[in-house]
Amino acid sequence: MTRTLWTKALAVALVALGLLAALERVSALVAEREARLREAEANVAASLATQQELIGPVLQRRCEETWSVEVGEGKERKKVNERREFDLVATPKTLDLDGTATIEARRRGLYKVNGYVLKATLKAAWESLQLLQPRAEHAPSVLRCGDVVLFVGVGDARGLRSVAASQVPGKALAVLAGTPRGKMPKGFQVALTSEQWADGTFATELRLELVGTRLLAIAPVADQTQVHLRSDWPHPSFHGRFLPNEREIGDDGFNAWWRISALATSAPQDVRGQSDRVETFAVEFIDPVNAYSLADRATKYGMLFIGLTFLGVALTEVMRRARVHPVQYLLVGSALAIFFLLLVSLSEHMAFVWAYTGAAAACTALLAFYGAHVLGGWRAGLAFGVAVATLYGVLYLLLQQEQTALVLGSALLFAVLAAVMVLTRRFDWYRLVDSWRTAKPGSQPA
Image 1 (cartoon, rainbow, N blue to C red):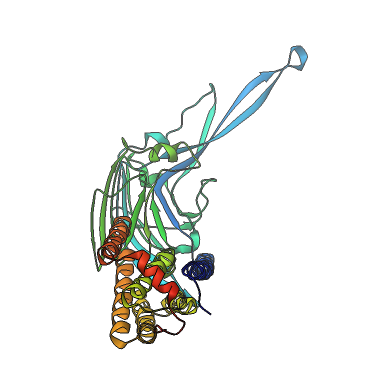
Image 2 (cartoon, one colour):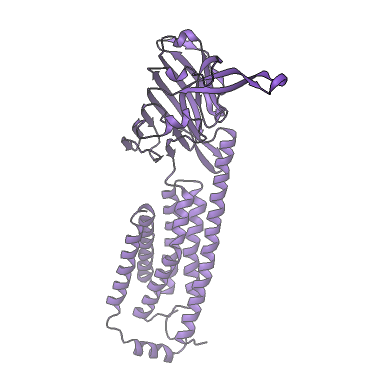
């Protein structure tokens, strides 16, 4: 049955809507698979260790002041003992942290989760321990203080594989689990005798091995904090309150240096003031080539991709006087939509670049073969396949250039529009439409 031009346009529009619905289903599938990846990350964190936060070392001393007060009147007048407990906290004058974070990937089914092992040496020094000397608030009163405790707080104590502490120079110290600070219970502590800080100064060296997932945060608790962190992960994301003063990032990993003064951070005051939150800086071991995020971005370009292909087919119809049935548009569009499903499924088993190449090659070959029959010749089919392959190449370029994707996409659309206008500038569209209306069924190649 002969169809009018408007009937065909309506049919192709309905095909496009159906393909749009298919792409939405693919997007939902990508979102579901990415949610499973997040579940895998949470599962690994629950079994191994969560994101880590390193706060310290800090010196703390628990003290008690007791005094007597008189209460009551006349014969009822008597003395009552009262007491207050308080903590004295001293942060270091200098803190030097030198660490290496090695990535140890964990797998849960299809999903890879980045864990890390931090091996670090912390050298801290206190030039004065006046803050650990108690002051009476009531007179007369009696002051009693316990031993000074050195502690380091962490985000998840399960990640502490080993800790070694020594007083400089070289005297080993006994390490115990936990911290004396109620708001920061996770970590480790070392009890110091009075002889170890009798001269009013103290210095220590800590060596620890800490396991975590995804993120490592460090608190600059000293008056002068210097951190040198290196890793074999080439895609760090630096954030928190301070970015590195210097950084080197290459294919084999990164080096980063921080130098932070107490004039620029509230971390020492946060620790001494028993605050719930301590200012930190952090590095996140992100995966920028996450297959699901790239597949989701690719799917968002899907309708544009299909629209440009349909435009190419329609232009070929006009230039070659070939008639393409809406069902054939549907099949071509379905092959394009299947590409995104292939991309998601293959990327779960191989690198994204190879998954993209495989899916694009399969769909290009199929469309070139089909185009040869739809458009009436192998040359036309081959040209159609080359055009589709070019679109796949442009789409891959858009995925890799996240910062310039908008300008590249806009330039592509402008180039396509310009090409269509140039190729059809001499067409007599009225005559062309009339010839299609009067054409006999079967007089043109299908």
